[in-house]
Amino acid sequence: MLLLAATMALAVGVAACGSSDDDSGDSGSGTAGGTQDATLVLDFVPGAVHSGIYEAVQKGYYEDNGINLKIIEPTSTADTLKLIDAGKAEFGIADGIDLATQISDGREAQGIMAIAQRPPGGLITLKDSDITDPKQLEGQTVGVTGVPSDNAILNTIMKDSGGNPDDADVVTIGFNGVQALESGKVAAFTGFIPADGVQVEADGYPTKSFALDEYGGPSYPGLVVFSTESKIGDDPDLMQGFVDATIKGYQDALADPAEAIDALISQTQGIDKKLATESFKAWTPLLGPSDTFGQFNKKNLESLSTFMVDNDLAKEPISPDRYATTDFTQPKE
Image (cartoon, rainbow, N blue to C red):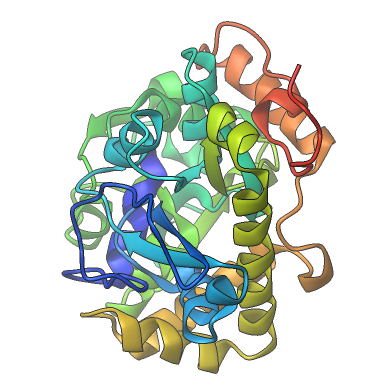
């Protein structure tokens, strides 16, 4: 989906591994010292939104739960989904719509915890432009990445404000929304507001943003950790151990963001500390309360399913129980 490239704005270059020097992307199956090897594939390059994971690595929370975690980045958004589906890794991170698309396509993917409770995506424009409402994008050039969900987001936001998206000049710009907006090639673009929007601001261009869930869209989980139904059923202890450790990492990050950003920077390369700090601040309202971090809201999952069907992104509704599970002790039917 549109939005997974947005974390690219927060880092450049190579991701660091959590606790292994092998970057092949193959999931380890051995154990050492009572620990189990497991691989997590990020949605894109490491960024502020992942800081809770790196915090958990640094503090040994995964090791405490018997997990030797390796963190890798994909070469593209689609790679994360493919690697998990092919059994090359135990865990992946994906946008909530991307996960729903996998399920709709008949894949075994299933969410196990929500990192973001709300979608980070929407329309981003410049503050000094004449656009104060999405309906004013009629007759304007709007950039999208080229995937179907971008158009669904644009259409939803414009229609909710009383505009006609058919009257916008929609152009495909890939993941170059930041550059296209700053250069004046587009009046607005679809992107991750806590990442792309923060990047534009850091470049010296104040922004205005129109969030999807504030303009007619669902409050679906914006980023989701997922695995497959088979892996969840075969190794519930691994799933629970990973979720528990990750939740602790994010709870620590929410309590002390500076410490978490330091953990992120110490294990990765090319991340600007000031930009990451501002981005995490922008992500924080989307992560939800610390004491309920990671949970799925059934009503929100139902709203996402309706959104998918209404926008021809899924052929049939996806039940909340199929989309995600957080009870790894229950046998699968």
